[in-house]
Image 1 (cartoon, rainbow, N blue to C red):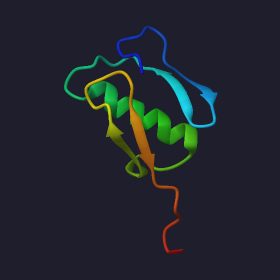
Image 2 (image 1 turned 30 degrees about the vertical axis):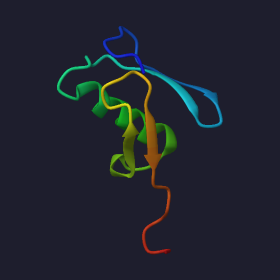
Image 3 (image 1 turned 60 degrees about the vertical axis):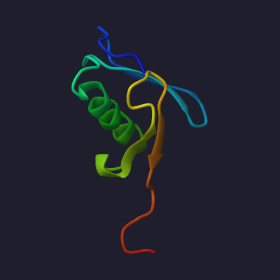
Length: 73
């Protein structure tokens, strides 16, 4: 993840590996929130389903995405 970029994008590199660039700075969790929004949009899930597992304070992040539909479990 690259924070503070001029251009914002999500690029799929492989099955579950993405390169993400956001305009927000890596301050006060701004970039992390925006990355979660972009991941949610890319995977077509609500932002509440996207959690940062590791990498809160680093460019490399691992996300957990809950893709189970409500009421089916």
